[in-house]
Length: 340
Image (cartoon, rainbow, N blue to C red):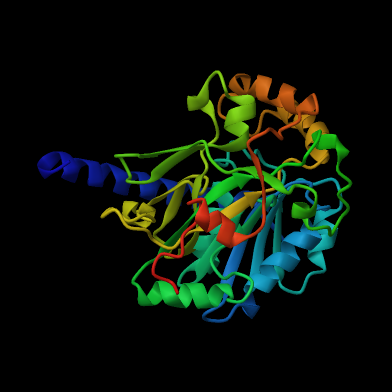
């Protein structure tokens, strides 16, 4: 796209970004601070932002893993949890916590709340935005902290870092794992789909659109275009003018979505190991189908929730056992790029 059409497109995207920022400022009134320790944030800290609901069993591992990566402060929105999530987080010295009982769906699936917190506290920091069931890995993650990665990205002039969501699952029915609070979910969900991923570039904002993996295979085989989007840009050197458009799948300004090499090479990227398929997903699927807070078209996903409630077996003959980031690199699911 060139000439007047490109200028018009750029203008519309600027308006969209300003609208999203204005939404976030308005939605800040829905948040109540439970404990605000943001005064402890120092320049150079890598921050983590989450919006969660009833995630108490996952929190010990989530916090521990991200602390080991080098996260210095967590800024978390608790959306009306009833399982002790708020009590657990309130006592963590590196957590600032807000609560809201407002609609997750009406807040753009929590992104309005997180955009406000990033606008207020994330400016100038590398900010990692996650779901509670996502485990970030990247090249050399066991020996190099996030600060090493972000310092290298700074030297490369990059302000964003992409990651592919990879669904992890057990060998048998979802219900037959024995996950306990604090466990590493990967001990119970060791398998993933190593192939069957499709990639397109979305022309409007230049972001990737990746679909496939276990959820596409098991739940959307008859309608693959409805399968979940797997590409994300979870790590960004934030500026108060930035805004996520759809979850962390796309951002504005559009240049932040260029987390791939347009010249045919590879840029450094990571993987979000998606640990959704623990036994609790069965009861939660019943609840979330009734709540209708997770998808714009709840009827479209009714069959998806019904399949989850039926305790599916996601493992198949083509399943691959996870061994580490080098395996993911060999399969083309993440890349070292120029980071050696």
